[in-house]
Image 1 (cartoon, rainbow, N blue to C red):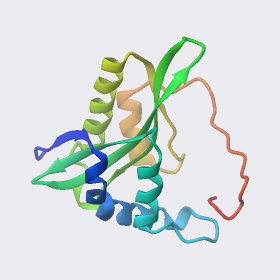
Image 2 (image 1 turned 60 degrees about the vertical axis):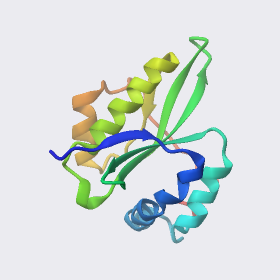
Image 3 (image 1 turned 30 degrees about the vertical axis):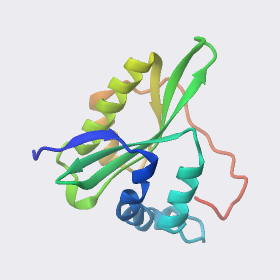
Length: 156
């Protein structure tokens, strides 16, 4: 395993994420229902304009290897906060090097420091590599995820 570091991406550095967003969009394109993914600039614009969105990035030699887009949310049943991991992506040439695991571990440490009750995320049933990692790191939740498609052209 090669070494790398993780840290929160400051808003002034968001543009450093453009190459990863481009690769992420290309990888997700087959999962979109008849529409092309947004451009990396549009993705970045959306993230940058949302004060709730935070990005944790893994780096090696000043190059981004992967990112975790997450939200710090209220968890009303515990009257606490929780973390919601929305997107996790690792560049294809950086996979199987511990980047995803390091991002989740760093996010878990951040959540502990913030007093989160838990960190939650979803993963497509077809992503067996991610599922194998997540089942080593976390317990499967005792509930199912569902989606109500409000725009049928947005995704499958």
